[in-house]
Length: 85
Ligand SMILES: [Zn+2]
Image (cartoon, rainbow, N blue to C red; front, side):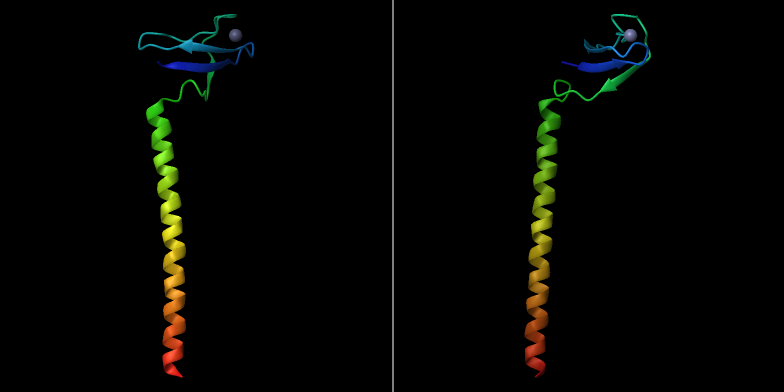
């Protein structure tokens, strides 16, 4: 459901509105259409949430790989060093 949180720039009223394709969002108290869309937990679809989770998990995975690679590199450096002597 495309429910969005809005803040009216005219009167500062905050409200939720179900926005369909034909809907022109307007402030319920002053009818101003000068609205600021707020980020709402209700507006975030489960698809977006799972995508964000995948992204977070992936970046965590990449980061841990980086750490592992660095450790392997360091170990290799030490091993080569030992061989030289
Ligand atoms: Zn208003």
